Length: 534
Image (cartoon, rainbow, N blue to C red; front, side, top):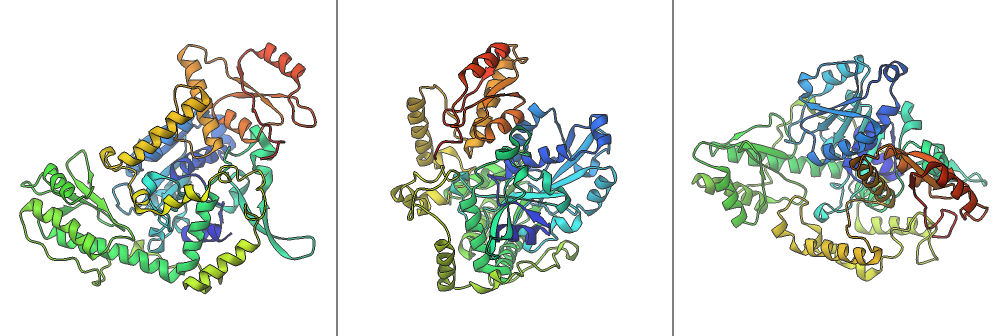
């Protein structure tokens, strides 16, 4: 509930779910949801195009494309300022701030999109919303993104909870779990799963999504981060990040570089002077063990975060100065700068609930967490019920290394030669999984079992199409199978045929044979029915 409140407050949206797997898959869920929300006129007209602004993160665009193909959705990219409002479009996706780091004012665009009956989804940097006008205030229908900035290390692109928020009128189409406040049979306040009828364990192939495991542990961490810092603390962190960024812009521009972002939060993009090349910058940067972003047109950029201090900021400045053959001063983070235009600044309050006002010391925070812990069931009490199966086998010895900086601080886009340890771990795990499964290839990309089964079904679908058998599009699934199975199959472009089971969840062999014989297409059986214990 804390997590949902944080997201609703920062995005200025009335409803949020309790986390997703990552920003890219949250974007894909937004596309599916907006497709389901098309008006009758749009459905009759066959509107099937989503416009995606070209300055979205590339990994997000890649996942959107992958997920859209089997659903018959076309992805169209371009500059949002140049969009032609045609009737085949039903939705738009924007990045805020965009992938270059520029803060765009999307208010007018969103109004025009709504006039054309388009839905608008926004991928937003959650920490930036402490300073920027939140998307909910300029008309967004869906806001999503990553909460990695709220207390989770980079982990080489490893796990961090995504968020997803929308308008109240779309709640029945919203994917993911929603926690609501209710009363138990004794009249006491309690929390429970709300609007469960949307979900795959009830609706199965008609569910809004196949999402199941949703990084709830990391969402809890993000929630605790917000509880500990409160609105004042988070605002101070965001202001400090922006101030250091502004100081770096001022200092680097004094060296004859030009900064391309008119408005920014934490990211700068520099046009180099004629006498400095990107290769010179790269050579100096690598010598100082710093990775920068190198654009195809020769520009160089970087982003900073909560961990950046005066020393690391001065190192960044020195790279540009040395490449230009100039002297440089130290960056003083105590100098407060603010370059954000007033029209883009947030005026509304957030995190006003009392839980975000109380626990701002280590002792208070530990006691609060312990009180919550006493209300929960964990491995210290008993076995854990189905739903936590991705966590229950991790021993303390396996979790301990997660706190080591060698694991936590590597950026997902770092050159491979700088991440040989991670590569070895990934390769070793892949080889072990090959031996265990007896298969020849392994993908570690899926972030959950539901994502894994979807990936597998997409591989099967692509293979059948590659050999000219795309007509084989039916999947036989037992009625006792986990609800994500039929939901994933539908999202992968298959039709579902349900196979009967007995009261214990065992497959009815006679029914299986009859349906397999009459269809002779793709057969998929869940080895462990959902009826069995975890």
